[in-house]
Length: 234
Image (tube, rainbow, N blue to C red; front, side, top):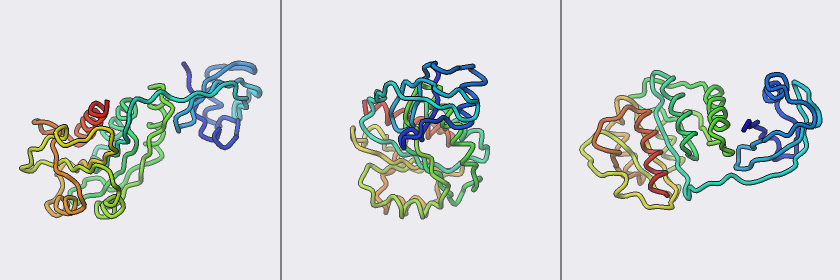
């Protein structure tokens, strides 16, 4: 099933973007009266009929709308320090979208090796992965902010809050997670969180956890966290 992303449909705009129009008309060679499937990024699919087969502004009319089947009962928010090799973060975004999560925030920590990211590229990867995995919900990607600012912004949110690190803590995430509740989990840089950052997070209500007995790379830890939280929420 071919999917075309049209977030503007929620505002009553029944025209594909220039990029989606080109793919629909020039690449896939759809013509007027063809039926196509659209997604809006907030959980709905649409069957639509093409009424104007133009390569830069393909117009359509909606025939049917239905909601995405979602068996995840709680929102997963990952806060992660981007890796020096940005391709590892791009890989994470792609796989995380396929598995399912709600939001990712990028944080700048004391030991961070990357302090800038190309959000436009990451969003394109996110959209592509959403379409490839036949989902209709686009996860939220937040611009990089300092660790302190993240804690100030999210410390008062009443959900489960966890921080993964390489210290002496041996509490498994699975042993303290409460099914059905939204969760935020912090994943540090390659050099881990500093002792000050760990203390600040604990003071802000984050619980120290580990994801298993193995030492994981940053992007692997984030993906494992998403898999575990999805599984625990089943």
